[in-house]
Length: 104
Image (cartoon, rainbow, N blue to C red; front, side):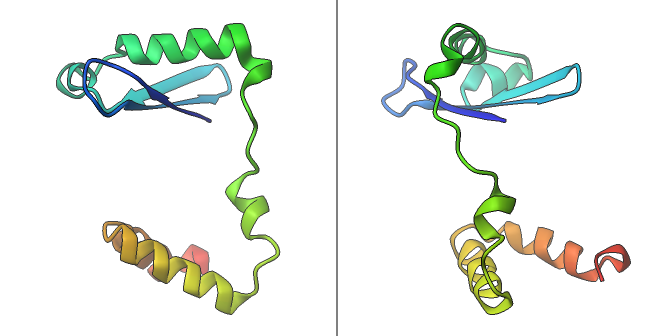
């Protein structure tokens, strides 16, 4: 997964996310073009070209699994509570995961 902030015509940069799974590549951008047309915009293309040409210079961050692996249950619960507090839509994701029989 690749995240990038790309300077565009607005003051705030656009947020681009690209993900490769096998031979499939998906990407999103929060610019008006991508949101209206649902297609790749020039910010996505610029991000992918930069990654292709300068991939070695892009810092790699640990996965979420690696970050939370050392945390104990209480710390994980506090983390989830903090995340939901900062991003309330995550509540429904947590609720669905907690009520799923496969997760128990």
